[in-house]
Length: 339
Image 1 (cartoon, rainbow, N blue to C red):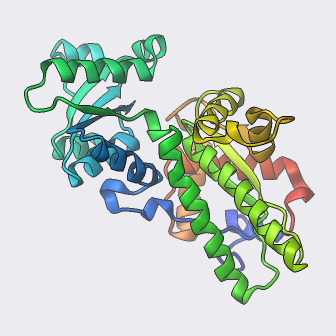
Image 2 (cartoon, rainbow, N blue to C red; image 1 turned 90 degrees about the vertical axis):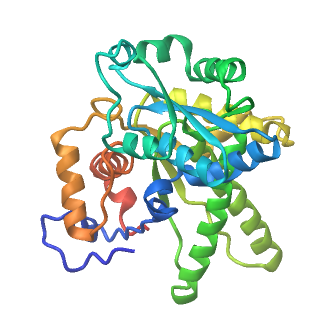
């Protein structure tokens, strides 16, 4: 919770104060230190447990050249005794393959290499033409046939976003509900009105939106039995940092179906209809994935100066920038006096 009463009139928090908007930040960047910090470790808790239960000796996953997911997967794999194999998407892939360039030691690649990851590369064209799943399958087949040390790899999709990994954010919602109860011990009438986050592959978005829907349905059923006031669930906003909203609605529906939502007794509602009711996906990628505008970077810098919280330019920074500048900015009175 960031107190926003003592900031200059031109500041981000001061503008929120004008609308009496209270901003609460759930610090999922602090989930596991430099190696694991971020939302990916919640998914990896389930995925790597399955890898160990399946008696695998290695993992294969895929992401961008500076992928946070690949970094976290590599470190977490070593922690549980598995060998990490990473496919990194980069425009330099052909030059690296021809020995005209080197993958380097910058940013997340430094962590990838420090834990001894085997690194493969693909071009954006190959990624788009073949798809991430096919690329992971091909590397798994290569390991099974040609690797002397690893013979039973476990495939992890981009972002760890599948049905199993998404349960990590069902757990996160349970944690959030407990935190809301803690706040209500001091502020009896406290309610969370909006939940905002970035989405890049759909797993976190699915877990949060489905989890909140189920949590509030259960809460209101108990309140009804006790004759207590009903609490509407917060509006959920997923800010897409790549692709378009329809892509995410489709991806989230597929993940939710694989989690078991397709088996719920709701014959008049499709999974996609349920998802579209549970979450609003906003087109927030701006100039493109991992490409920042000067306004976005200025916003991140200003937010850090006012709060001491450093947002990243690819996900959280772009998401909060878009939500406050575009959604709240255009929504006006709809967001006044909200949490």
